[in-house]
Image (cartoon, rainbow, N blue to C red; front, side, top):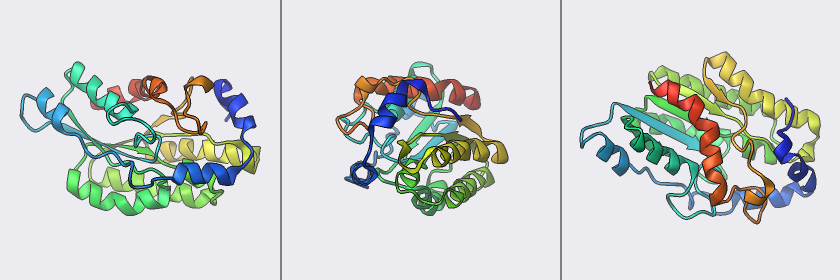
Length: 229
């Protein structure tokens, strides 16, 4: 799968993967966004929402380096309210998380929140660490299967990484998200950061700055909204 043109210069400018890994993993757990049911509760008139969207992701969804309430998941929650779509959003994303970490956390999250929809935004840290992607694919498949087993619809959100492990590895990572979505009958957003210019990244050149998060939402929303209807 070709790399998004808007990110090509950035990808080839990154040299040291170990530095990237350290930046991604900084503050793991500390930046995990807590569930914020207040907006959805208000949108539903105080009644229990019909639907619950559970987001299981990493730092890209956990508001790493951002003020709380400014990331794409929080923007999605506000958009749901503005469009009067009866949905509760639970953001269970954790900075530095991998597909293995997400798989280990998912059963408890499913039991606690009983989601009708699950967004899986994991795999970037697997790639940055050079993990064997066969195992990552298997983890994502198991997560999708677990979500479907409780009746939830699944949306897989893909990412891209710097080319430190070569083009073949990057192509394999990009194809992984497509394979999971196809095999599990899930919806797919191929690349979360599509269209985000270099100027809208944080100083670490990995995480999107606040100004770029509306673009992340615009990449997810057209695929998510039909699932909610």
